[in-house]
Length: 87
Image (cartoon, rainbow, N blue to C red; front, side, top):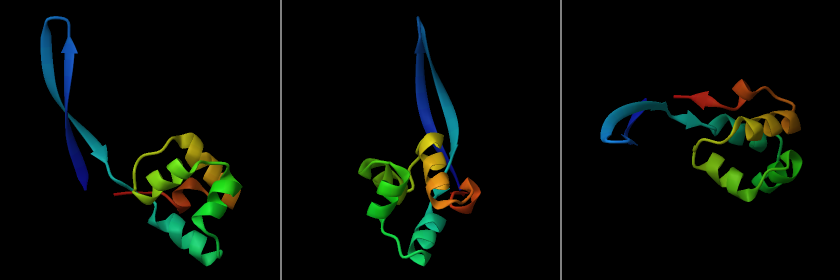
């Protein structure tokens, strides 16, 4: 599923309407991994050194930085593609 966003860019004397394609992301696999390992989201925060805000963004399938994904990957000893899915 591709989400289309409309962005307005103003440059000096004219404005331009541009359609931007973004991909939806799912972290559903991450929650299954935590469940299999009997871990809670709070445990993930502590293990990966990420904030509650970042976990909330992951819960809502919102975009996070690659730094956050890397920390999770390292903390759980898994590859990013093991828990991130682009839809």
